[in-house]
Length: 338
Ligand SMILES: Nc1ncnc2c1ncn2[C@@H]1O[C@H](COP(=O)(O)OP(=O)(O)OP(=O)(O)O)[C@@H](O)[C@H]1O
Ligand SMILES: [Mg+2]
Image (cartoon, rainbow, N blue to C red; front, side):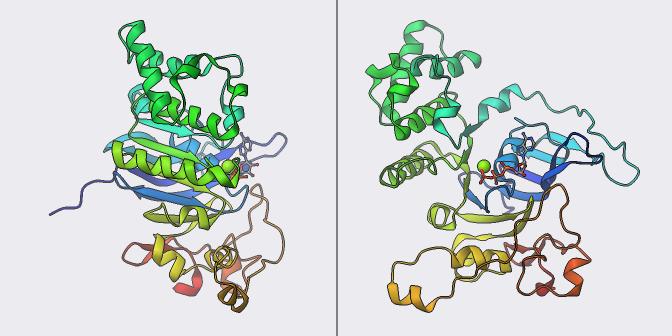
């Protein structure tokens, strides 16, 4: 039997932010990223601060207009555009016609990194959740709408009687639950979870993770789950993608990526993950990267990681390594593997 088509397909996606006074593409926040996500799957996405995770998530949902590439959702091409900065290209971002996004805005939702900044402080949580219901006309009567708001609050573990409260009256963890209820209000299929727990106390992080996992099981949701840290995504992801300076450098099933990483950058990320056994921890060497993260305005030539890679050789500074499938389902971009 043929494999079912992935729910989300991303090919050679690029997102550049123009920089005042700088000619050319500016900040290359997302550079030529390709991956797919199957229905019901969780794809984890990790990488250090500034590597482009949030930009990738938002560009995939077209909250930011993509610069180039192709985005396909459930078999429908939502965006397709050529790189305006390619040799001979127009040199500035072009407008592209896409499929009508409104139905897809409903199917694809996001949970934001900072819960307090993502909720309007002047609206009650009932109004915040109700607004999402109104935009997509998901309730016929006021009573239906109020009932739905109550159900959503209960589903995320909040008291429906708190619908009249303002965001500042809730704790950080509760605010994140409101953000999740707002995303769920429109009955989405696909959720970008952008570091949904990193602003929360450690004690409530696992509660929110468990809730997201339960929701996935009950509602059949598909996740792109963004985190700084491999230890967070390891357990909940089917597969994990590792980003460095706007590029995906490795993509593999979670246990294979953790047990047998192919890319030197993934190895450094893994060496930073705490292990519970103190002896194993002492025996394991933590790899400390030399140098700073290069600027995405002037990324290094060749492999983006070569300036910090302990194994770099001459070719690494000259040619970018292709992102290739080295074994079934195991993708990586590194000259050492070729
Ligand atoms: N709206 C924007 N305008 C200009 N540059 C931006 C914008 N958003 C992000 N950038 C730049 O794009 C790059 C990637 O940023 P992004 O926020 O996607 O990283 P991140 O991986 O999510 O980081 P963090 O882990 O800190 O959230 C950074 O260099 C950032 O400064
Ligand atoms: Mg981010």
